[in-house]
Structures are given as structure tokens and as C-alpha cells.
Length: 119
Figure 1: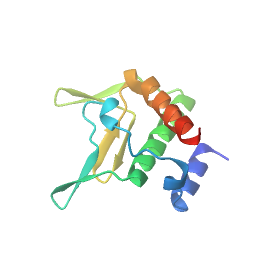
Figure 2 (figure 1 turned 90 degrees about the vertical axis):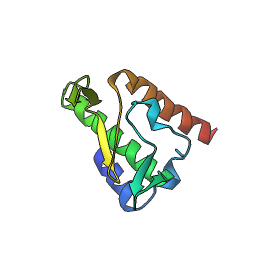
Figure 3 (figure 1 turned 45 degrees about the vertical axis):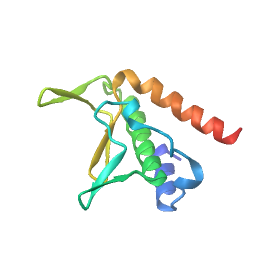
Figure 4 (figure 1 turned 30 degrees about the horizontal axis):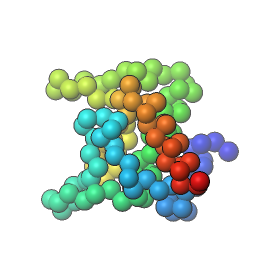
């Protein structure tokens, strides 16, 4: 099975809360423009664990696909004088990305969180 198929099955069967507990993850650690909330009805709504797992799974799949197809993951996108990472995902009209310098931190944080959960 491919990573994409596994992620699809996780989301389709709503297993996000069963496989990861990411309530304490702070996406601002990986990019200064990231938010830990989305806007709904004019109010800030914090991401629930299910949203955070969806974001992480999407970022992992994006990272895997770009590496597998030999794409340059170090590229950034410039808009209005600001540099945004190409490794991004969108959920609830909020964009979450990983700076190229923070990819190692992102992956090690995920491994630490999952290892601590099961120990």
C-alpha cells in the first residue's frame, strides 16, 4: 500500500484521533506565518486534534511526494515581499507550511510525540 492510500483510509474511517495525539503541537514552530486556529463566523477557532492530524498527514504526504519525484523542497514562494514555503497544506481556509530549515525539527517532533505516547 502507498502512503497516500494509508492516509486516505485513515481519513475515510475517521481514525485520526486513534492514531495520533497532537493537541500540544504548535505549528508556529515550523513557520512564522502559521496559525494554530482558523476563522469561522468571524471568530478564531482553535484546531482540534482531528484537524492537526489531517494537517500533519497532508504535510507528510506532500514531503514524501516531493522527495520521491526529485522536486526541490528548498524552494520558496514569494508574495508581497514575504517568503512562504512550498511544503504547505490548507485546512479550513488556513495555510500551514514548513520552512525548509525546520523540516528536521518537524519530523523529530512527530517522532518524539508518538514515541512518548506509546511508552
